[in-house]
Length: 240
Image (cartoon, rainbow, N blue to C red):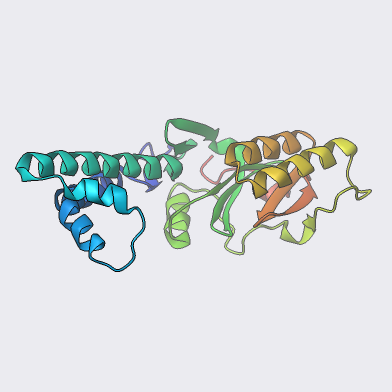
């Protein structure tokens, strides 16, 4: 059977990125141009913090000063747009692969390695054929649009979510069901979750996967299960 060589992109598309750059750039330009007037108005209030810096801003006079402040604040708006886009996930889906793109980071997964796809608490999850989670990434997209995109390329979609959700147990330090090594990683990951160290959280998740432990989060609470052989009828990509 011939595979469709086209692709579907969900998440942050180029059009959405250009729109965000333009919108925040224009907002910054407008605020920057009128910032001396805004500062003057703020100083008219009975109590306002940062009075010293505001007085400096109100001292800016003339069109050249307005142009400079507008340019500076517009640049700040564009930088902020770039920072937001770099944190958001885009997913490029074909019949053969799924590419997960965050900023300059690209993760490619072959379709033959994906047994099931679903959304769990606003996170996109790709399950491997042995029950391991190949991907668990937050995605800023409507679930119905994500489902439509994956079904278009013949991936198996779990409408009811994670088929293993009943097997997850909340992590309790030093519980006898886990090895000391797994407990050490879960403790380190718990601290990373509290400190919002996202790179460490993901790194520890991958290290736990090497021990056969699948982990999911609800806030800073961690839930875990042991990976199992995936049900035979879910082992293959539909288009293969």
